[in-house]
Length: 406
Image 1 (tube, rainbow, N blue to C red):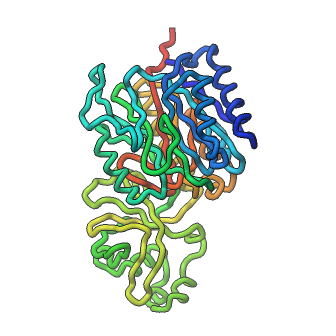
Image 2: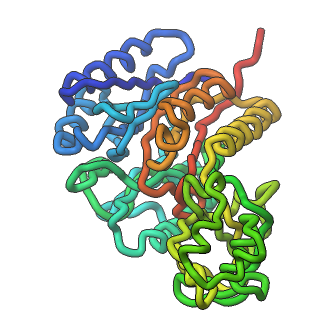
Image 3: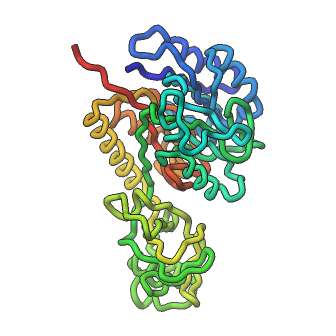
């Protein structure tokens, strides 16, 4: 099974960066192990290049002969082993997929209907790569609606990011707003994992009373009291109704990178081995009410939802990234598969901001899974399955049968 050709580059001039990336793509066409043909292109570009997106796509089409393209712009761009987070860059990958196994969609070109079949009889919409405009109203609901159209429920991607107006998307044309991307049929073998960069403070709780974005009680107790207990604040300090006193009582080393809450549907069984992973969507804790013992969160929780308080933590993020790599490596070995190419979408709050240096995530992926074609970007909200996440990394692998030794 051949790998997808890819390339990446940085340069102040968009044309020179694109030419440098194309040179890598073209240089691999006659090398053993790389796919000669391609019928789908994925492109991620820095927001600095956004005004030139039409010219970039036109150049890519002309030089590669590929007519179907999808992508978006990002605060930072990643590729195999490298992260461009303070310089304009582009990353491209050419996918060689079965005919009629994918379709590029946008608001102007809808995806296949749920249950539709391809000419070969495969499920037309089994998985989807999603790009989004973070300013789109009710974006989380749109993502959920899109998931209902994808038979396998596997969606991966993220919202555009960066200082550009507008934040562009590519879906066989240059556009902005709403959702766009690529829907894949059941003929395309994909494996996906979500990794979170948070460490749970304690165990999970059940939201027993809430209103709008306010959590009133957890497990039948005042929500603020539960949080303070999870943080290890002394009982004497917990009893205070003075906000300044409570803030001074918080353990600085545990809240240095902010306080967050992971929320999960109370009806859904936990998928992760411990709180803070798998099925939790992490949101900011945005305020406390010392008098009424309430918590305000950047979400609209529901009674019966499960909740776990957590903090951002580079060590925990590394450990969880290694966890998903271990799971994927074992899955690939068990199913005799190899990686043809990959897309990695990380949160703008991760990267250097979380780990203290660049290229940590892609470097760890390469160390754990080997060197493989990868492109991606840093998003203003990550998409996985039917949810819009935050503070996460989403890794999707395109796989195929492993080569058999003679």
